[in-house]
Amino acid sequence: MHLIVGLGNPGKKYERTRHNIGFLVVEELARQLNATFKNKTALEAEVAEAEGIALMKPQTFMNISGRAVKSFLTKHKCNTSEILAIYDDADIPFGTVKFREGGSSAGHNGMQSIMDQFPKGTPLARIRVGIGRPPNPDIPLDAFVLQKWTSEEEKKLPEIIEATIKKINERIHVPT
Image 1: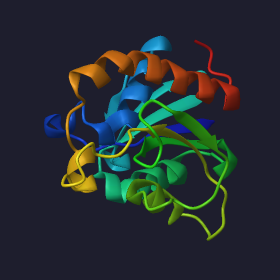
Image 2: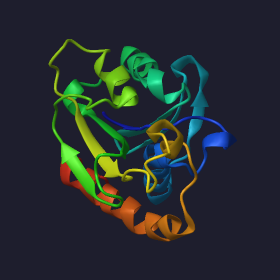
Image 3: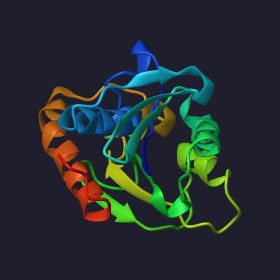
C-alpha cells in the first residue's frame, strides 16, 4: 500500500494557509479518487483509502507529523519506498513543484518529524511545493507560512495542485 502524506496543521485557523498545501493536494486527490477522509483517532490522522493508496492528513501539528505516520505504519504494511510526503517549501519559488527521492529535511520541521521515525539515512520521497519567501523582509518566515494565500495566489492554486498530482502520478500510478 502506498501512503501519501499531505503535511499541514489541523483546524479552521490554518485552513487555506501556505503551510497547508499538503492538505490541499491530498484533498483534491481524494476528490478525484472518490475517496472520503475519515478521522482515525488512534492514528492521529484523517485517512482516505482507494485502490491500494492511503491519503493522510496528520491531525497532530506540523512539527510532530511523524507520530501519525508511525502510527499508520504500525497498523499497515507499508515500506519506506511506498511513502510520499507533500509539503510547502519557502526556498522554492511560488508555484514550482519538485520531486526528491531522499535527502535532508532542509529545515522543514514536518518532514524532519517524519524522517525521525526511521533510521538515519533512510530515503523518503517527497514533493515540495514552492511558496516562496515573504515579499517583505520584516515578515518572519514562521508568520509568512501561516498566512492565508493572497487572492492572486489563490487563483493559481488549482494549477499548482494539478501539477503536484501529476508529479505524484510520475511516482505512483494513481487511478484517477
